[in-house]
Image (cartoon, rainbow, N blue to C red):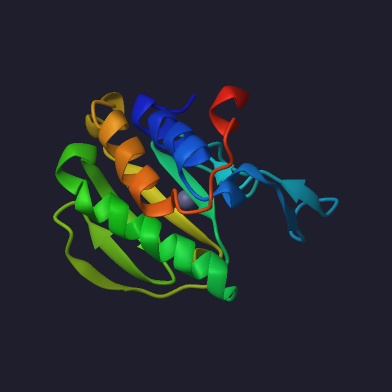
Amino acid sequence: MAGIAVEATKQALYYYGPSLLTQQYFEKHKKPPGLLDRLQAAAGPHKTGKDPHIAGRALDIILFAKDPQEKEYADQIVQVFLGLRKKMDFVSVVYNGWEWNGQGVRFPHVDEAHKTHIHIEWGKSGVGIAAFASDLEDALYEAFSGGNLKSGDYAAG
Ligand SMILES: [Zn+2]
C-alpha cells in the first residue's frame, strides 16, 4: 500500500493538476496492450525487490516528453514539486534526462523510462507525512486553473 505522501500527491494531481491526468493512456508494453491510469503508485509487474513503488514510497506520473503539451505539463509539475520541496520532503524527482534530489540540486539521469513519466520518491520517514497536501493543491491550482478545470470537477471524487 502506498504511503500517505504518495496518496496525497496523487489526489492533489488528480483534482488540481492538468485534467489530462484524470484520463487513461494507451500502454503498448502492457500485456495485452491497453489503457492504463496516468497516476501510478503501484509497482508494475516488471518491478521487483527493493523498488520504491513496491515499498509504497514512489509515484509515477505518465506524461510523454515527446508530446510538447505533455512535456509542458510535466515541466510545470516538476517546478511545483521543487517549489514545495522542503514541505514535501521527497528524496528524488526524475524526468526526461534529469534528477533533482531533496535539496533541489539537479543532475543528469539519462534513461528511456523517465521520458514517459515523472518519478517522485520519498524516504521512509518522509512518506509518512502529508502536511504539504493543501499547499500542493494550491500550487497546482495556481499552475493549471486557466481553462483546465471545468466547473463541477471537484464533485467527481
Ligand atoms: Zn517510478
